[in-house]
Length: 200
Length: 226
Image (cartoon, rainbow over all chains, first blue to last red; front, top):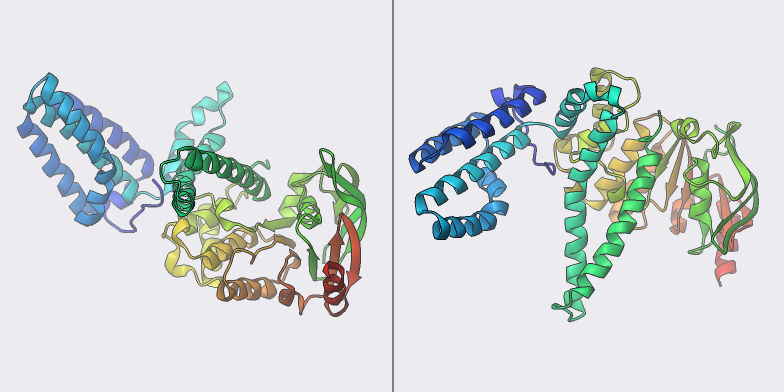
């Protein structure tokens, strides 16, 4: 979601964003309900791998999407092995991994603008209850944008902390990062106003 | 050219007086604003498109009060910030350019055409689908300028647009600003940028300390800061 879109012309790229989102939720629900054994996990993984191939996404890019959840899955797997069984650990972690991979596939084949348009359209009926779909779309866009921005702030502050020899001080990390994040939020608000985001 | 008028404009942040009874009428095509840090020049720039409301006095653009009719003025006046990272909203370059037109009433084809025009104008056509946060500093600032120009404003206000850039990128952005047809008001510390300008206003402690051509204003500013 942070600008990972991979340009292409595959059937998955051409599928409208709204339909892709509905299919994503449906696929995750189906996988969660029907995958009950390790062999079913293997079949589902093969299907997801085939979908990545159809979309023309290389395996390096595909694996990079899964890397952030590996540690969480490892912890869950340990708990599942201790509390249930190794087979159950494979199923639980497999379903989570497949869900993340499917979400990543949608992200990699859909422009964020198209995704936000779909969300905005989907929320259209809620206008009568006072919900502003455009504003929710903007909120999602900003949330996506803030991931690399905050990552960069924390990275720079961590470097400054190291340069001062304060590697182990949480105060030296959290305080400046928080101050910079709040300043950045202020500046972004001002920039959004300047770009007419709040003008009707 | 638009007529930007500051009429007895003062501004304070809490107890701190930042601008003191500024009277200016800006009609030239290239206008520079210089002054020391904290002199009030960025505050002055933000008032032109209604981002800040003066504590007293009025700022008008072609007769429209920027404080009272901010949205109307912002359609006419674009703003480029010092740090393009805070101005970029969407994940990819093309999407960020398109974001500026989300409430313009243009259809998708018209928006796509304008986005393409901006990508080509600033040499970003290879980066349309690339993550905006991975561009170089100069490219990010060009994207920020493109995101302003795509709305086709008649005035561009830029607040230290080259301050965070290295020499090469600063020159690229300066050339891009120099090439725009619109009226431009640039707040800057880079005095060389002002050589081709029509008028330079020197702000010191919230007052207009000098107002004239770059040839006169820059030496006056140098003398002022010692």
